[in-house]
Length: 132
Image (tube, rainbow, N blue to C red; front, side, top):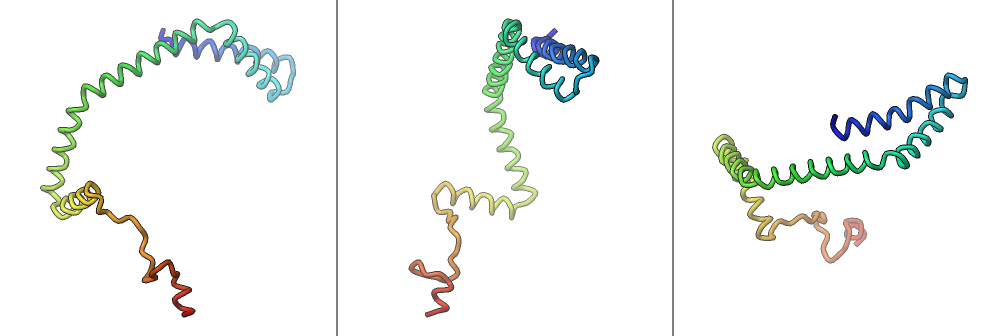
């Protein structure tokens, strides 16, 4: 059984059993849920540290495995992106030209992302110009 399933089953059992007992005795379900939640947290924290560490280690290994897989396929992704760009350029040359010119402007630092000021110069707003 994987570490995740094992730890999740323990945590659910620690909640469901006290909740069911308290509701069966006649307590308010909302209050029973709160008490069962606190009990499940405390019991898992005190008694099931080993299972939590196993889960942490399994998650860390999975993350490292995913990173190594991404590093190995990074060059392939670059080739894929280049081939997709080439296909886009063949099927839609006007869009490819626009995208290429925008990319070149961004690289050169020429892309102007400022908002036009509707003809107002020297910090004057359109209202100031109307008053003048």
